[in-house]
Length: 181
Image (cartoon, rainbow, N blue to C red):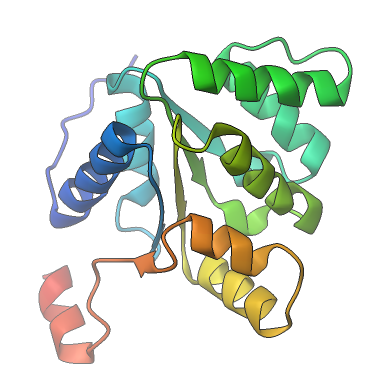
């Protein structure tokens, strides 16, 4: 019930622009950047203000059963019953509604099998649903390590989510200081 005043920071504007692009074009991206810059706040705000924009916190649904059931509940799909039926219903629902986008915050916290569910959902909703992953350095490390170790699914997930990490905070120390000011 609290009223928040939105500060349209560079971070907010970039995440909003990327989410709107993904939503309108059924594309998927990964935004990885520093902690405490407003990623989560922006994602939650957009999920409340955009039609068919859904937010799920991966840190609260780490294993695949919990992730899938939480996603179903977030979408308003029945989360009880057989696991395979819930997944099928999620994919069907996301293909049927107009320009959906699912924002997964902290997907780096997902267990391996839960992380692989992202690939299945992306494949099952390709061209009909946008996906947007938001995380910090741990997500970048998880994906890069998975690709380096040739762990099944990581290269495919990275490719489906545009094959690059988007960010806004500069890496050069002086530019970073200036950005935070």
